[in-house]
Length: 71
Image 1 (cartoon, rainbow, N blue to C red):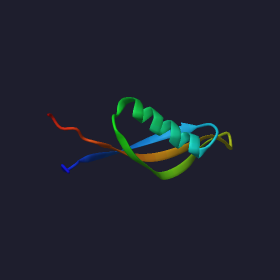
Image 2: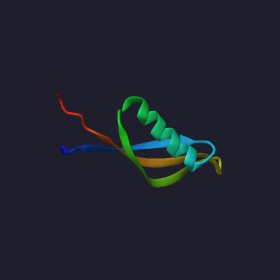
Image 3: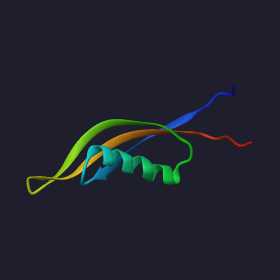
Image 4: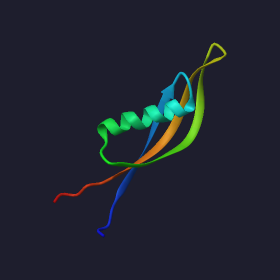
């Protein structure tokens, strides 16, 4: 099997309803422009607060994708 190389980037998703939806939004948006996503890892959860109330759930996600060499 040939050797593989992967790149890991950090993205942040946001949702007005839940952390799960925030993570899902982040991965789906990343998959629209990055090919061959392999793994997603939620590394941090936080909240956006406005006027003393939760305005959005945010998920920081590391995603990895495979580098493809020239053939």
